[in-house]
View (tube, helix red, strand yellow):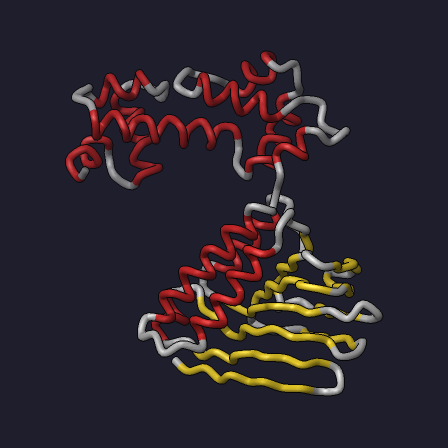
Length: 288
């Protein structure tokens, strides 16, 4: 695993970057870095790329500019964060308010699926967090790690990219704002609170729709838009979690537990549990 620290000045930009070559292990098994750096624009310019096997995150630390991506133009200002798939054509430009950026290009086997999840939850190429400093700090930490001689730096980079992706994903949707959107006819937070309170009961979508006087298909759509999962999957996840707790920390039988969490009697509960966890309830209890 090698890195090259490059400090360059051109008529357009002054930059500091590291071209990073991850180990074969990191390339196959981890989130890995391809390039990380920062730049200060010296005059207005446009950068265009396409077909890169990479994903890009950058923060506008000062100044302003514009992003062109997927046929749209996005104005960029200080504090904006960009996250995009570089396999698609994109361009970014700065004009009068010359900007300073901090960025990283990265990849990994799971990144395309994570990006698709980001999009499915409403994530945009550009978002504006209340405080962009944590993004800058992560990118600076990635630069420092990539330039170090740490013998486990690929693992540290994987960890830092995981934190970056977690922070990015937290801006892929916003249940509070979505619930207050004029198009929403029901407060989705009330529905989630109701599900949390009654998750061990046998609830059907029809029951839930009747409780909140809302169309069933509309309920399904807004719940998934806001929480990234279906009502049924959310309920099942809560039930399985409670079942695991009872299997580990109680002496109740498998049959009792299936009924208590609202899934069903022994054989059916075992089938559902195994489909989710990969082992039967009895095997799970024995393992843990």
